[in-house]
Image (tube, rainbow, N blue to C red):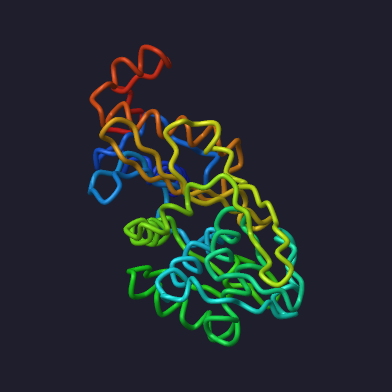
Length: 298
């Protein structure tokens, strides 16, 4: 019987352990998002964390990977170079911009295509142009990730594929937060990260492609200023978002969400802003939230 109660206690502790840490650390636990595998909401370039769950868990980041691909390209100093689209870059699964072998496109336009419409052909074209091959670019990605402080990440490709030959492409919410905080210090990255559409020009023919964002939060939530969406069957619905309200600036990393990620992100931002701006009571009254409720605190 004693053994039985020990097992039950262990299971309860395993289930609610991360919530207890949240309560004891001052992170708000009054709303626990069980339909998101891992998340964090934090002051941008600040120390205050408002919500967090399993931030060190290794999860497939899907197209959030392209943030690293983009910042490497931006920092290369080669954004004005013409890129010859190779056949290898076009032999990828959708989402694709639709480039053809032999097309010529500015590197800056490929970065925009990769970030705004999550074009996998653009990400592969960036890798091949900058490093000569995808494998060499992946080596550069992992080297840069470690320099940034991404301690538990491993990248296998520039687009975010996570099966077959590209299995093992993993990161964590903590690492992706570090990557994003690094990337947003770059003005050009910030400009691209908040675009809702982009026109990409094929330089030989002059033909233009209109590419639109998959980030519905940009049109749904007025305080959004980027950054990137991601999805694969293994990774689930992923999102890194930045929002600014009055003098408050917040970042959100969401990995493997089962519910409506746009609604979840709005709710999480609003709750964090309420605390950041000292308006918990107003928010609680309007949303029926009890900020004093701590179900896991002893």
